[in-house]
Length: 64
Image: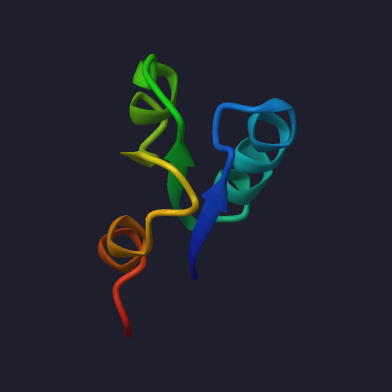
């Protein structure tokens, strides 16, 4: 399953993403700013932006 996580570098995201990866999920994470190297190194696709940007969210979560 492909999972989109908002706040990928925040407190919850830092704990949730490793669990999702352990279970074999593909993860895209919304992050406010850099650094995001830690996410990329684990195979997470980081999207830099803000949850209020609908255009960005549409690109980050393409329809199936």
